[in-house]
Image (cartoon, rainbow, N blue to C red; front, side, top):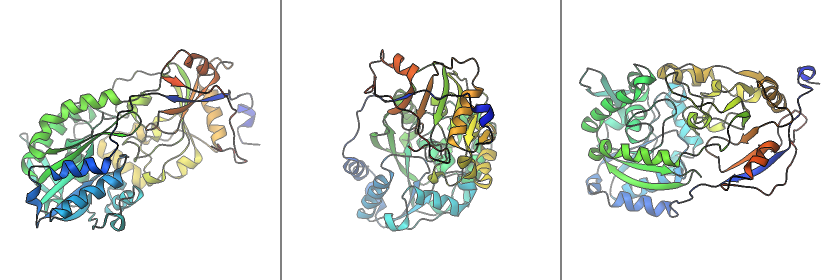
Length: 422
């Protein structure tokens, strides 16, 4: 008998149904060909011959990342460049160089797989100052190369709004700025992050050795739907319109007034806040306006790729012990100290098993109809094309043409330790 069985014994789990959520599926089929074509046709590509080129690779969960990085390296090498990789991820990995290299390894970006060295360092050079005197930093290894090339996915940010959010400018300012650059950009808090990113980004585009950025966009299925090279001089002009397009691809959970959302896993490889705040409508920054649609949120696990960084766990009401046990304070807190936010790194109620965590989520949800519980379970906030919904929601889904399912319900299954079997 579990420690909380006497309190949670009355909680009954509803029958669940697997459904698919239909989105626009337009995507690029030939990833390698598209990347190669874009890089080969960049007007200044001949200039890399005989030059050392730093390839900046971040920690985000980008689809086809290994293939994209490998292809960029191959094209640059074919053009005569000497390529090496630098981790471009601000203060991730506890702001420790070896941890940042390990994060890349978790994403399949290793020296063996890519065929080039990975030079990981937290050292930076100051490459200039903004008009109001803010110093601008750039990864020292990248700065000592002849050119830097970056890879960035353009998408709405989880914690601030601005002309530039997650994307090409942020990859330079935060990613290549390392902990120092990230710290100065976050200096006035998330409410001013957009403005800081813009003014610091302008200095990066004027003063750094960035040659171009390979800009990527993904649809709601997490499939690559845009691959384009942008020269340094056009990034500031082009990115705002791309951000607007990326927002149109953002998926959502197609139900309101949920009693409980169960998220199988969170992690830095999924998004910077572990879960996409735009989807769960819970934010790490107090200035963001939320549109709450769920009463309780349960997190069951932390991805291995996150390497102990449990940023975002604090957005949950309840978490499993296995998620908490994977949390490293040393790898989580530097990210939050740099960002000057605390909500995402707080510790929720910790329950020993999935079974107890889910039952606790239901038990603590206020004003619910226990005979018609409204529950959604997802793998993570990158994977919303498939989900499990409770019987009450299945009845509601019948009126939504974008939701499909076979109508075969099932019961929750747990192993002897109380953890979900699938």
